[in-house]
Amino acid sequence: METWDERYAGGKYSSAEPHKLLVEIADRIKEPNKALDLACGTGRNAIYLAEKGWQVTAVDRSSVGIEIARQRAAEKAVEIDFRVADLEKGKFAIEENAYDLICDFYYLQRDLFAPMKTGVKTGGIVVSTIHIYGDAEAAGEFLLKEGELRGLFRDFEILHYHETSRTDDDAGEHHRRTAEIIAKKIK
Image (tube, rainbow, N blue to C red; front, side):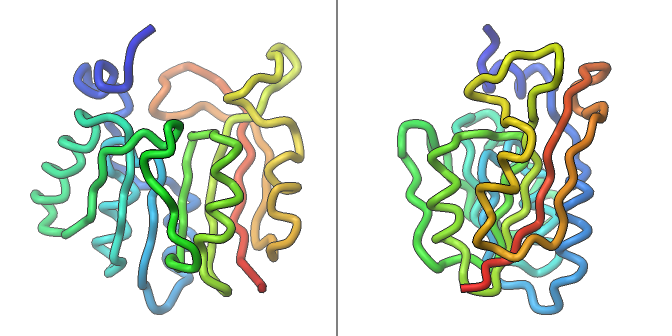
């Protein structure tokens, strides 16, 4: 199985376009502040936020992905606190009440949801899109069940929730169902 370093070195998952859901919510926030981009890959979302004036910390386990992200950020003349850290091994701790926005796109680690929820400040936003399993797929550790993402944020105000079937631009013809959420911490 190909590692993330190998995937990024081979040019896979190299889109520079930010996720549409992030663009939607970031444009609605009048005063950008601190953001955390989990499993940032080659930095497309972190760079977008930094260009909008956010102070961004971006974390990924792939040193190759982070190096590509650093180069892209330098080309755009934006500063981002990039960290190479394996989230699965607990090499990055999400500080409590530290972020106004936390984003997580296409990375499922169930034990990260609690720190994400405590890491965002009251009034802050969590935005996420995660793959869910469909009729032909078995549930697994890297796929959510239908409705699971909404349930994880039942104590937040749900500003947007949608489960869909779509073609991921980064995956070519690979077709996966997704759950997407924009949730605001209310207490």
